[in-house]
Image: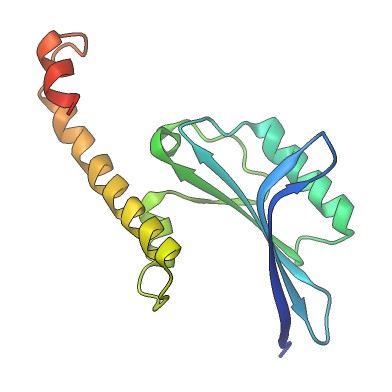
Length: 151
């Protein structure tokens, strides 16, 4: 089994001016090639097939690696969770419930982690209430709906 030598995180991993990847996690192994977690995050925006293809191809080329060396993840937050998903080109989708499942239950005593987890839990509650709110509305442009739900 390969042992981990070092882990480094690179936010806004850049390919010059053409493309940026939200987060790349490099896992350096003692007796093997480095492995990568390549993470794209969408918040209230649509993931486009062209972006996913480009991210995949640019990363594989720039690191001279293959599919076994990199895991491509697409995290969807907010309204991105309900958009039509394009062909994923090796990306694995994580919506809010899956993101919470993966990151919950870890004992990490860092304020930034706790704040982020609480924000995710709060968003999950809002997400689960949306269907209930929508069921009782005939017209989203009704003044009563806007006033009641603006709080």
